[in-house]
Structure formats: structure tokens, C-alpha cells
Image 1 (cartoon, rainbow, N blue to C red):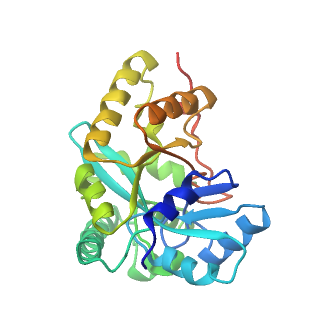
Image 2: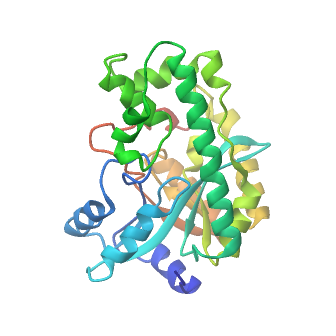
Length: 286
């Protein structure tokens, strides 16, 4: 895929109804790319992007399906990344050439590491006697994407736990499970990688950098420190409108973006109609 960078920026910043952060069944979402495109188009969206975690299979399907549709489709991806300032910085990439050698090679390496981590996680769960088989894993999303949400859904299906959230608040917080770390790239490298492939790099949902019960007066200076560092790395924009930011916080992010000549984006971070995330814990400036 080859895209004009200026055209991508124009679409990301246009006044058209848009949603540039959507997940599908090719990562931890529920809908297929085709279902996403049809639904968002029917709801009046003019610009959308599928941004599955650390993979582009869903966006490739979307590119092909959207060709004859009355909607602008931006190829996207959401990378997990890290930095000494934060263990989880998510970076959205738009309009990249997925065949660019560095981009292609590093995505393949990342997926290999994820496969190894998933095997280790499956073994750790089975030591508890949960009996999770490879067939169980393939039964969720056809095995297109495997991660913690996959194992949580399997445990719900087996009656081991009552809800997906129960896994994240319980089993996954136990010491042996917490020790199984997700290997991610440094944030600066991810920005470079997106740029190498001709893409646009946008920091996703900055308010999710806020820790549980962290007072705003402690979080605000830390947030600016993180944002400033991403700017030094060459990030192109920040996701100012996202469910993790209330109205005041979005205004704060927009102000920062304008002061630093950054692209302002918006996204729903849609995964599922059934398993809705609670973003309210990030809200509030007091």
C-alpha cells in the first residue's frame, strides 16, 4: 500500500464525521472489517480507520472492501510501546506502506514474540488445572488474534470465571501471571518505524497514562513530560478526543497539540457492543 502522506493528514484533520481508532476480530474486537465499514458508513461516518493491535490483517481486508464504498478508509495499526517514562504507550500509525522492509520485518518479529508469550500463558493457566487446549484458543476469533482477552473469554466459556473482567482483576494479577511480560518496542523506535514506512504517527489516548487513583495534580506534570518526550521523538499528533478524556481534558490536549503544531485526531476505540470498557476512572481534573 502506498499513500500520500499529505492526503492522510488531510483526512485525519478534516471536518468530516470520522472515527480513526477501531478494532476488529483481527485483534481484540468483535466485528469483522466488513461489518465495521458497513456499520460506520450507515451511521454517517465519512472517514474511518481500523487500528488493530500490532497487526495489519484487518486493515488489509478493510482496504480491499472499502474500495467501492462511499467512505474514506485510512489503513491503520495500534502499536503497544514502552519508554522509561511509561510501560504502556500506544502509538497509532496511519497510511503506511506495509511492505516497507523494516516495517514488515518488525511486525513479523513482534508477532513471533507474542506467540511465545501466549504459549507461556497457556501453560501457566493449565498448571492451575484449567485444561485450555489449542482448539479452545482457535475457537476465539478463529485464532486470528490471541492475547489475554482470548484466554479470559475461554475461561468464561469453560465456566471457570463469570466474566472477562474477573480474569483481569483476579487471575491475571497473580504473581506468576504478572511475570509473563508483553515484549514491546520502545516508543521512539515505533515512531521511527511508522515514519520509515511513510506513515503518520499519533499517540493514542494520552489520558490512559493516568494511574488508578492518581490525583490530577500529580498526573498533569507527568502527562506533559510524556507528551514532550513524544514530541522530541517526532510524533505527528495526539488523540485528543477519546472516551478516556472528558470534555475539559480534550480541550487541554487540543491546546497542547496546537501549541506544538501536532495533528488532532479522534477515535472511539471500539471493540465490542457487549464488553464496554469503563473509561470514567481517567476523567476529572481535581
